[in-house]
Image (cartoon, rainbow, N blue to C red; front, side):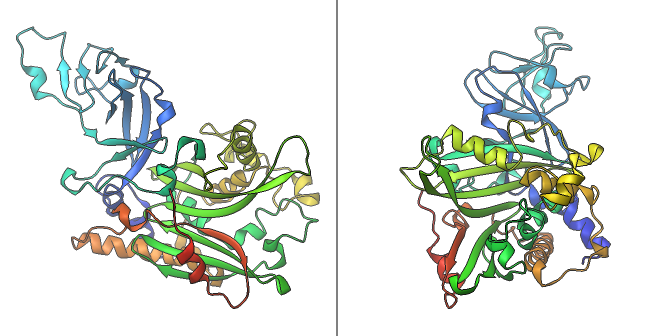
Length: 424
């Protein structure tokens, strides 16, 4: 458990808070590139680290990320006209470029130089992997752009979606790195006792710190078959990599199937203290097996995202008890809640906006969660002494991968981890 004071330190992300200032030293997802599909398209609101922002793609295709509110009378620039390389406030016509400079004040005299004295706060952006990333920290400390493998892969081999979660980012992170809950929360066929996560419901966890965060493994004893190993990578401040051998059907013959090695992950991006935007990504790691629309749709649907499931706009929330079906819970699934991701959202949101971690009682299956909290507190202490946070340099993590495999009982998991190297 944490003290209430430490819990405050690692959960609050607004400007001037310890964790908020640390977060601002990393490149952070601001929105999907598809949300700004073309030059001069409509602007989009963005909420990031407690700040209300607006983003737009100008006539030349450049992306601006600005304070949402016009410095004249504080009207929202979301209402603005995106035209001729600038975003124009509809209230009095003040116009701003992607750097936040005021380039036109049509309601002032033609010879006025007032516009030269007015600017909006703006943040640098970069577009990689179908995501527009923002850097909100000191310009002199801005690191190289992100370098995760999936951001470097061709568009045919990657996919990213979003989900809005109504709680603090750390609840989302801790839910994602909790290995043992899959045996229970995601037990979606009570009669099936063959899945590895149900054969051994108490995996042995081991954690190792790295230069970018930590890597950890869940080891399940599956008898004579060997050991089921799931290796995860946690890249600061909120990235998780995981791996799967996903089986998809080829053609109309249900018996004709192939295994596709897939790298997956999440980014749990703090919108503010009480809201998180989750970015869910998929990466096909084989050159000759790209992601197909059918495969993406199946993955998203099976996890409760996309058409018929949850997207940025949620349909299953605390207000309707996540549409829990008690009869389904009694007879078919462990939760009675449809969709793997929705099951995660439900338990995490059920804790409240920010859980009081001083009330917890953690066990041996919580080692990754304990490691995460310790490393966050450590980087806060180092940061306050002037030390740059771990993981801001993309060279530290650009070649790491997760793993999901069966191994003989005498194989060290570190051997598997060291061989799981990115290729894109």
